Image (cartoon, rainbow, N blue to C red):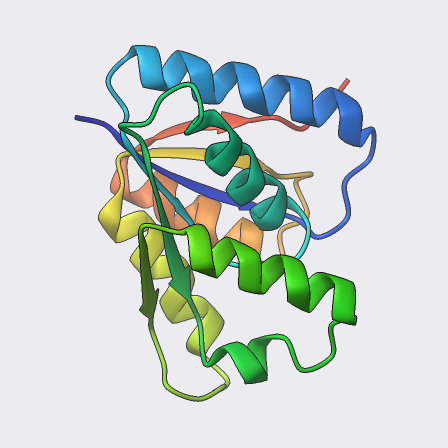
Length: 157
């Protein structure tokens, strides 16, 4: 049974195209036996993926959304808008499990979250522009080191 993690940047160009690609790859992975999907709870691509998996549960009730969060909800969302916090709260309420890698925000809690996402999975779906210095880049390097399958939805062309 494949387990899938998601990682990606906060800002996404051509979001409608990325949503189409994302839904197609999730559907393909479900058809290949994937049931467990893990996101890190960040704004941008993580949120997009969480919503996509929750929507896919309407058609594929066997799939599960697992959140691996870096620190407390209050600290993670401290600078978010009310709308972003409300969506985050809704995602948490609908998730099948929620795990925290740190109780409080620390200088390495995001890295611990990224490492845990890779540790739990054997497929990584990402939106990675190639920017080396980023949490997404860090997660991709961990996934490469582990040897897991990576699908990048970013269009390099």
